[in-house]
Amino acid sequence: MSPFYRDRKDAGRQLATRLTAYADRPETIVLALPRGGVPVGYEVAKALHAPLEVFVVRKLGMPGQEELAIGAIASGGVQVLNEDVIRLHRLPASIVEKIAERERLELERRERLYRADRPFPNLNNRIVILVDDGLATGATMRAAVLAVRQQHPARIVVAVPVAAPQVCAEFHLLVDEIICLHTPEAFYGVGLWYEDFSQTSDQEVYDLLKQSLSFQHTTP
Image 1: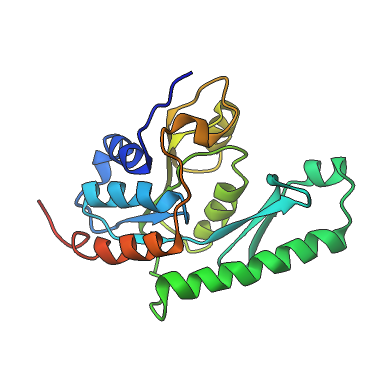
Image 2: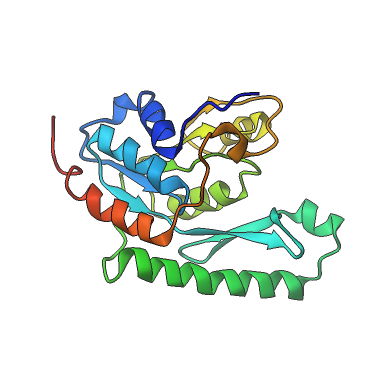
């Protein structure tokens, strides 16, 4: 088992080659899921000459097993719960709500940090390309899709470098287009497919968003 990508930037450049149909179109916008999706989305937006924005989504982690998603929340008050996991672990509603409230506070903090006073862009009739560094359970991306759909875009595209096969297949029913460059049967986790999967910092997210202003309104 060898990695497909050197790092998230390499993954973003490779992913962009599958999205050339959306290049240089004023209605295209790239929404990256922070934090790990932002370096990927930056390279996609740069290649397409499209605006880059962050779309803040927070996974709701199982107490004591934070990597196991019991759901996710996104901007706009959207909440998606994995009822099967909640039932299996017999989590009471009060615990789920406590986890969700904690993540709402972090979601609001990140929105202030990344966007400051800039309003979120209007997605009505836009081609929205949602980007992350990979899909494991898909809970976070599902929440993003539901939240974006409420803003009536013309088209929703989910694009990721790597995904669990069954999760990638599920998104065919949820969005207009799904692009998963690699869907290894023995998936195990997103990080295994990157040589460098070090954590993306808040500062890096902020810097990449600032740098993206230099190319998003240009044409080749």
